[in-house]
Amino acid sequence: MSKTSSPADWQAATKLVRGGLERTPYGEICEALFLTQAYAYDSAEQAERSFTGEEDHYVYSRYGNPTVTMFENRLALLEGAEHCIGLASGMAAAFCALACQVKAGDRVVAATALFGACYHIIANILPNWGVTVEFVDGTDLGAWERALSTPAKAVFLETPSNPTLDIIDIRAVADLAHKAGAKLVVDNVFATPLLQKPLALGADIVTYSATKHIDGQGRTLGGAVLSNDAHFMEKQLTPFYRNTGPSLSPFNAWILLKGMETLELRVLRQCDNALDIARFLEGRGEVSRVMYPGLDSHPQKDLAMAQMSGRGGTVVSFEVKGGREAAFKTINALGIIDIANNLGDVKSLITHPATTTHQRLKPEERAAMGISDSLVRLSVGIEDVRDLTADLAQALA
Image 1 (cartoon, helix red, strand yellow):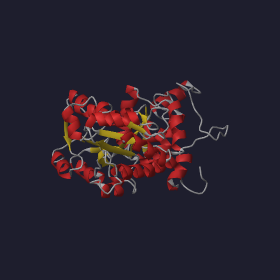
Image 2: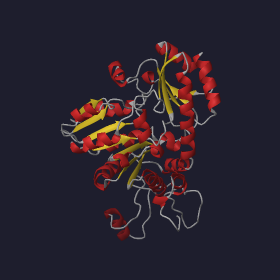
Image 3: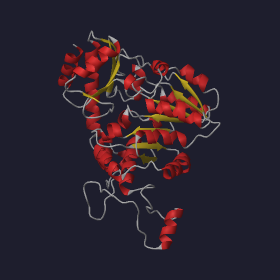
């Protein structure tokens, strides 16, 4: 830790390398990996105080672990959040953030355009618990205003959305949510904590799949929930995750810590590559539509640039003329870009959402999200953009 400045005052690159670092008496440079299930006490009295919370001492790695704590503290520092809980996956984070605060009779309002598994939680699991759910077009503030004229418990959205890259006005929705008595949960995976800070825009809770950009190298799963709301984190989320068990493993937390060291370098390179590729695709006759928040053709470009630090993100979606058959032909002809349903990786990855990430949804549900059979999602990596555009050119041709 700096002797002359507060970590909160550091720039992002410094926070990503040094934030949350706690060294053992051995003085290791690399963060220590604590592979332990339980912890020893000096006495039975200390064990009792640890369980009652009177003494700050780790009690069990499902509750907390030094390596996981370093990950949580580093991510909280980057996000500008007071609290962070690391979880086993991004879906564990999204599920816990909602499930810990709703019960039968409550109401949840969500944007229609969501990742398939998030949509499943809200459309299918929560209603089975007696929770009322309403979906709205996330880009339509009038729709949000109408839906939130009735009291609600939680509001959920992702921006940019997966895979159509809709941009939602976080501040405006946060204001409407709060008037309705709801907490706003923002899935910030596509923007990353580098480009977009939902808490600063009025959101109450932020979730991440750390599997994506935070690891960014295809190695491990992880998730996180962040908030400045101490009551939510300590009285709702913490008891829920401790007793249901979706804890982040120390090894995965260690991998994520190492991934964070290069997060800024990777994401900025990916954003530059993505913008170049989006412009390239707009000039291809085989492509009927390109979706990328950094393009002038994107209907919410101005909002995206304001919310996302002037960057369009690392993902480009586009529609290939000729429907599913043409989309499949293009994907199968690629030589460098891999076919995979992950994103945020250093390697460029491409997928067909209608038959992979969103295939469990009904055709009418996909249509409501704007996911056609011709839509392809490209997660842009850090390869030389000249090689990527050449690969796309030969595949489209």
